[in-house]
Image (tube, rainbow, N blue to C red; front, side, top):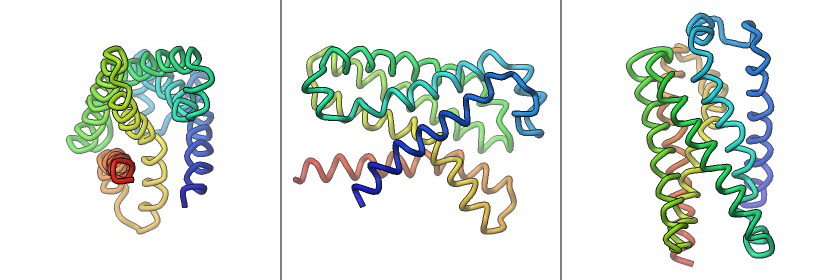
Length: 197
């Protein structure tokens, strides 16, 4: 199971990052029809959100490799700083466009909560690193990346739960919350198991 996760997580993260990059073509047809007008009217925060998310998804992956931390600590630090900046961009951009999400008020609130939590966990992770509290730093950054990975989980939720035949509004709005709650629960379980072992 762990081996499957080590393959699935980077594969899905890179796939979603690659697919999301198409928005930078600025082709209106890349936007979902229901949101096309809104997205085109708010391109700057949208692209800030998407761009930050893409960078964070990609550069966040190697941060959890023990070999990188041990053999290339400078690389770990600089890519970590890039991740933090990308998370900041993603969170700010997300907060600016969250109020315009489909199916208010549930979806906007779910996405805004995700953005705020991502900003908070990342800030706490950075603060712990600067204070030299490395074990705590790693725990907070795992939570941060788990929240960032909601970009993947949300799409999986739309596909899998959409197969049930539930109304799209229900699937979408529930996914705005479930996508990050599930990830955070998994991260907390991982952290708890590490403490026990």
